[in-house]
Image (cartoon, rainbow, N blue to C red; front, side, top):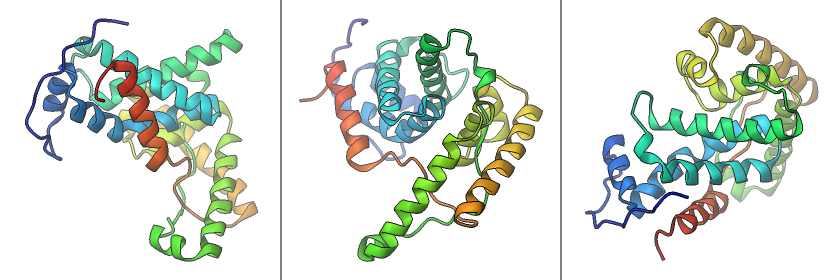
Length: 233
């Protein structure tokens, strides 16, 4: 691991602080900036890693390793793409490294593309919390959607996750995955069709947030990364 910068003293972090400020403060190991970056990217990195590995625990490991790698060589970030894209590439490469350890000839263009565009309506959290039956139904629908995403062929799964679940543009998705925009469009269309047929066959047209990464899981991972970086209490 590279040398850790001494933590500098900064004023309170503005909730709308620009990326350049976050990076500057993160370089000085400002805890608030590190937390802000991780909390903004945890879900995306987790979903991308899980899309490749199809394992919750391995995906969490990849996200943690991604932050440690990124924050210990943040000086190498040149801003040619957004910080989120840079972190996403590190996460994808880390996940692919783990896949290649089992299947040596796996490449990125053999894996990714999107998942289910559709018609998915998120249940209001407050209603689900106050209605045990709705909460149970939501969890069951979520399991069906997650299984359907896992069952997509590798070439389609990542495009769906990047484009639909994370809301990245066609151009961002193509850049992230190293393919042409037309390839993203073609794979996305096919992934949506496959997913819709799979999900509708089981529960009808629905939409929701699959593979959540928030609350205690998000906080636990953030704390683990900060501990590895020697930041905070």
